[in-house]
Length: 281
Image (cartoon, rainbow, N blue to C red; front, side):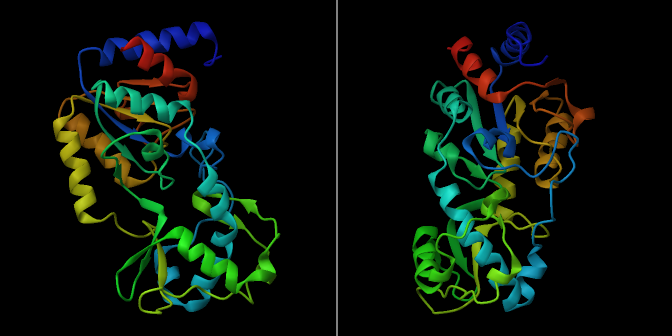
């Protein structure tokens, strides 16, 4: 089994040989946060779990869609807010502090890398901890918007909903009909959006440019807990390979970039990364 001590030692040796003399960039996906209580989108075959998430175009199209989004998100936020970094997040922060990796890009919107102590994290898909007003373009802290929603929708207090990826929940539509959508604290506009990249939305140009610049400066790429199904992440692997640099993945299951990988390690990143940080010290 991939998780046995013997296999972990083999995987550790492989990573050490690759990374001892090279400064790798790290790219993380949802798989690094699952043990912190945040569900991922895909199974080991790369197939999406459950219902498809709301598309950006749908979110923009109608007030009803935004009401449905925020009703579910109001119930999902508390579990995201209390999530704590796990050993894998902390190991990557340690590797960065010791200058054993030269940067960190994440597809995750949970800020757990920041909480673990990583610096200068490139958030490809934004952060759930911020809310953007599409009318005045000012940002609010998510906790501020959460309090507004809870005050205006007391009927949802105590309602239990199944947690879904990225702070979403599976909520009975009957609970959504009465929901009062939050207003912007600055302009009173009703087009508030979590400061994340929705499915169907493009990564901000500046963010994409920063990520590609990090690829240019790195000597290799370590992918952790990502199926690479999102093109924004897959293209970074392609660019790294085109530059003749190694790409290694620690991921339980299939990835879109399997044919690009120099090495693929099917093991728990929470077990393996702390061992790597210790070995590279």
